Image (cartoon, rainbow over all chains, first blue to last red; front, side, top):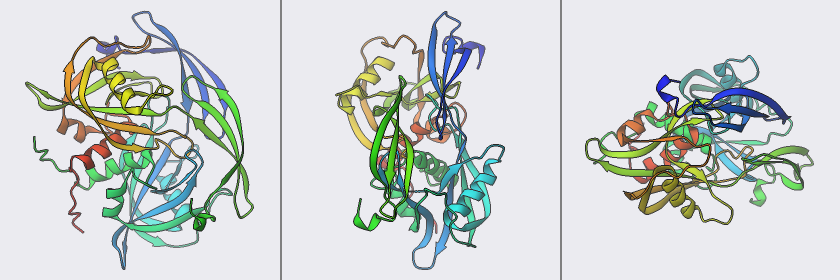
Length: 195
Length: 195
């Protein structure tokens, strides 16, 4: 942080582990400002995540994304999303992306391109989600899912996914951040804003 | 969920409150499938959130968003984002959006239009974030911040925010989901995908 940000910044002066959950660990953090404010805040310590945008040419449907359809335990709903997963300890994000794509779909990607990295929720999470564009997909084996994973794989036309993001079963905000990176990467955002 | 989704769906058979944190409450949920799987999962019970996209015409900069610049306790960084906040118990999301915009910026919006609702993280969060487009802004008073909020208000050209989302200080994935709704609402996504 810049010196000129002293009126905004907090400095960490203490950090205590509160609870280990399977998906993240909860910390309590003590912080203070240059101006003399003090406070206690929560920090969700989570592993980094990856989202993979798998592009395929379907014989009937044309240019498609390979989407996963699955039950989600937070929203208690079935969602349609890009394949995604967790970066295992010590693993490079790109390795995780290859692994998760293969496990969830059975497809191997010839190329994975990092198109963006963002904090999924900087207000209380300390992790990063990396988005990879996957091309040159080849079906090489069956899904290899965790004990509690139940996932359908569906190719859906690119234009349909873009038009549907954030609506109906496309109810995943993290996927929308990946879509933002995709739209910019593919030059699909109009630059003439009409104002 | 549809009957044909029995191979994906989990049914809740038990739910236990684990910990109350200030920002959310942690639950443990027991679930089972029609196929006989059983499991225990975590659910983050959080209030709904709102994000406000405040559009203004700046004398020098032209068409701008009113952005907030603040320290974030999860990422331990300063971010540039749209104003956002929490839906208080019993409050309508639109009321929260009016209130948060006024508190964080001092601006009152003549109109707030709901342009999208999405789960910020269906994997473990049970809440929804609603995005409102704010127009007809008028500065009517000073900021009215919570004890620990320190926020700078900066008008930034619309095209610059779109080009920067998810990069540098624009490091907020939730804001990117709101931007996805904005791009579609304003018809800023190219429909000729070139494939």
